[in-house]
Image (tube, rainbow, N blue to C red; front, side, top):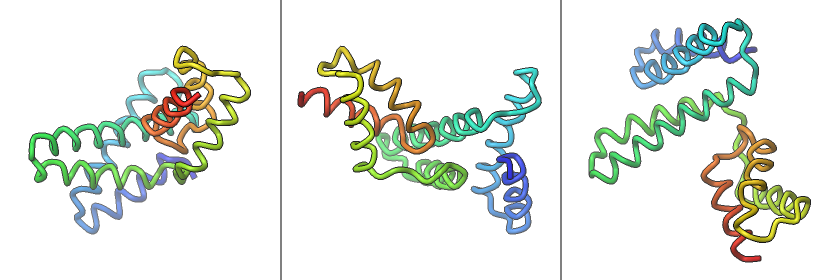
Length: 150
């Protein structure tokens, strides 16, 4: 089942249960999907595009929440984190940090990367391979730690 159909079903369920947080989250996903459909001229959205939209929305929510927490506004941070959690349900299962380390180590070995100057090359390959399965910030931290320790 495509993402749009899943979102619509969840949206109907959220309307019935009057879950405001879920409604906002699902409407954000629906809005992004509609924008992509209408702006690109193509009516069919690929699975990669769906993943990117979901990751972008989760990242926006987490960034907003961290800003609110820094400003001691937990009342505003909590709904953002709740929305991020709802949107994350549509992403594939996230890999553990150990699994990410294994993939990054393999990529570093393949590319022969040894310094921070090679970070862009490693990040490009790691981001492609781990798309939707890991957060970019986590991948970056792991790549950085590997390259600094070599």
